[in-house]
Image (cartoon, rainbow, N blue to C red; front, side, top):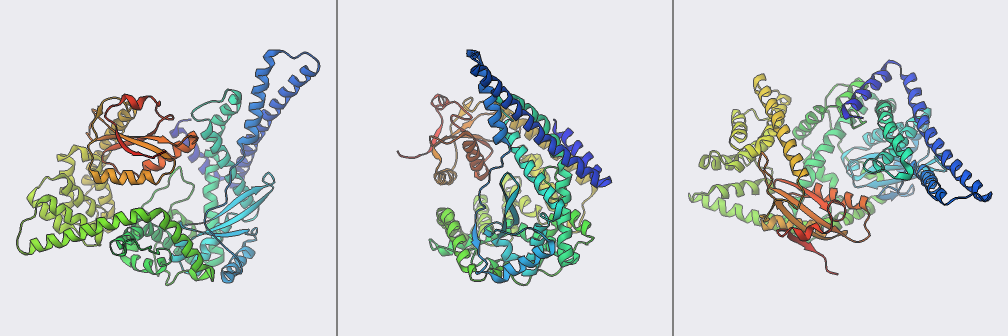
Length: 626
């Protein structure tokens, strides 16, 4: 099914869910039953085939060719028995016991009593800004073990009453008969998604019938049940509003949206600045998170984050409604109001110190090496600032590169505006690519009403074609921020940038397609990257235990806009499965920071083992001994 057809089908079912909700729910139920019934029929056919072959064997009529249908029936039976099983592993985090946090569990008991929900078998504190209830199916789904996951950052960001409002929303997913249906449909979606992914690229001959059915059934079931999953979010919000009032529920939604964005965009960026001062000493971000968030979440920044959240549009791939729709469903107006004056970490009781120390130890285990290197970089930038300031004081002229370094140091070490330094650089080189890019990037998110921002964006787009997509993207961000701040720009300017962005995105797609379609061993070039970039990449790869060796290659890809093109060749440890290797490649790709376009390929999975020896200009990045 084409994606456009899927979206159209999903919208049709969404409208049907509003026009006749009960009929729609029955249709979802019966279509879900149809899926399981089809799997059961295939399993019975496999059993029947095996029984027929066994009977022929007992009658002495077995033939050699019967081994092949027997294997096919065994494969189909195994696929049907294991295909609908949803793998489960206990959520990661630190457990909280009732005797450690009696106040927390007393609040959870009150919510459970009012919602009439099932018991919680474990409460786990994780390192994520989130809250969720996860169910582990038992006895073929006839019973479940319920885990409540509370994110430490959310505990640090919300007062107890608002945290309980979030928990009430999560408990709302398990309410009554409707909650049971939604939870079952949710698990079914996961099971069918797993089957769909398994059969998306290759067919197993012995399970061809199941694969064909899955490819037909899953997109239709996903589109049909999407509206139910989204309705369930609204219903869970109404449960929270019924227990704590619609006003508090609406305020909590807005505070969570604003603070989660600030936490993701600001907290860790600011926290890592302490690496300049602490050296190799182990910091304690989780233990100090509640106080640190009070300094990071300033009223003006919270309002800006809320405006960004309110501009989000519904995503057809995400069952969670956007914030503005959730507020409208509760009948609440937009307005952040008073933020939580204190954290809910006190609810953890005697377990607070233990859990905070455990989360800090886990964080330090992964961040220790990066913390030390980042501290060295910040100390070097701090020393550069002192030199530049001293030279400026005595009237010594600074070069464009030195002014760029000064601006980089200001952004890395503080919240000071680097624009004055960048504007000095622009006077020396009015068309300098990096100066224009940094000025535009800094002002785009602020929604500055400075007319020069539009001029800088236009210069970046016109004079540097390789930055066309980035300039158009920053322009859209700037125009949206201006509108949110009450400074809307002229319509013709917005239309011009919309057209430019559409053109740039089309060019980027074509360039990426040509890069992806060019084998990584063709048109090789010598790798030309700064040692600092290579050192950062090498450190990242050394932290991945499943990477045995890695090589970096560059290619001459004749596309516009022109950019460097890099391919990272990974050799994984022996025994690592294909799915695990592909997940590792994606993880490394997401964390990489190379200039231009780049991709990550696994030797033996994405590229043949013999190809590496054929490319003479590959650069060895890392190699484990032994």
